Length: 183
Image (cartoon, rainbow, N blue to C red; front, side):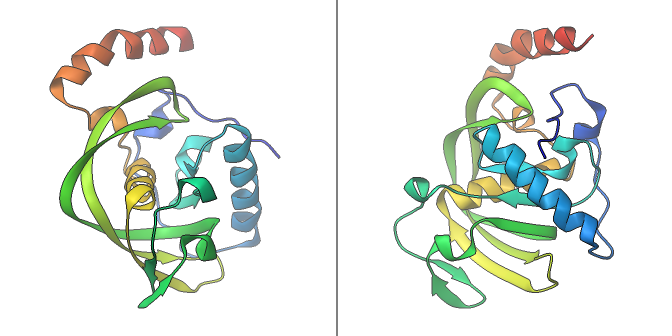
């Protein structure tokens, strides 16, 4: 079932999300609906607040053609990224590290706006899958960026908050127009 993707200006996008204390069947149903919604919108990641729910649940699916060369480390073993996609998890713990890299980002909740965002190149992540298993990842590339972007949503942070001061000035009118369209 397709869900409504909340847009810039919606208060749920600015709120810190609650941890998922116990994974229930409803979380699995939500994850399936979020994946369907994300695919329909041609995205690669979607966090629960983007569909109006203030809980720490994220879905990610990096398309095969976007995958980084080489392997990622999953629970201490080198694996292909495809082996963990789609990635569905709750209550993430991230440690971003490495050299900052500038890359263009967009967001399903900030339609038609893309901007350069600087983020650390790598991430160590501890992610709880819906079956209770813990995935410990060490990755770079698009997956590291996507994990940081989606987990920002769980803290009420949008990619537009992370752009340079100059970019904020450039984006200000477009973001204001988005708010006015909501009224």
